[in-house]
Amino acid sequence: MADAIPHPPTAALAATAAGLLIATYLVSALVEYPLPWLGTLGTLVALAVLVVSQLLLAGLLYRRVRRSEDAYSVFFRRATLVGLAVFVVFTAIVLVPEGVALVHRELSGAAATAPWSGVHS
Figure 1 (tube, helix red, strand yellow):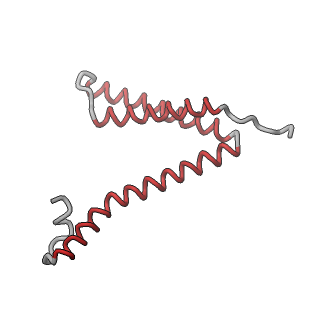
Figure 2 (figure 1 turned 90 degrees about the vertical axis):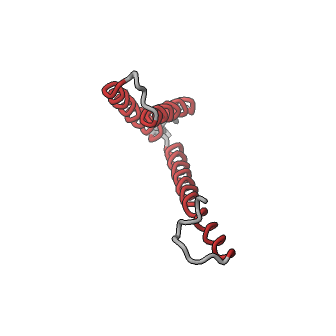
Figure 3 (figure 1 turned 120 degrees about the vertical axis):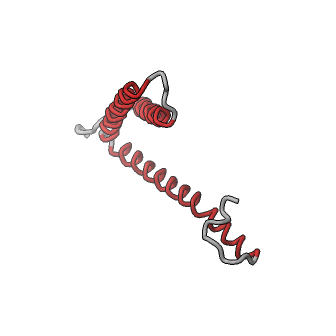
């Protein structure tokens, strides 16, 4: 037990993850809604600073999590589950309207039309 590695504090992990989340949100917002007063060069510089901060925060989070095997496995297990859930939800968002439109066309006896003709009507 002399080689036991101390667990990183949960508050430090949460603060690092929150900082990463905020930086990611700011990058998305700046790309989606550019600030006219910032200009093109200012936007590029701001994005570069935010992306570098994301890189540093991701590295810091990894370094803090890898010290603890329990935290490491839980962190990546949860991340994998969240990623899988996002994949399933996005797939359902794309496929469910098509399936509903197909069933509606089949039940209404409509003539064969283009596959996406009734989805957004």
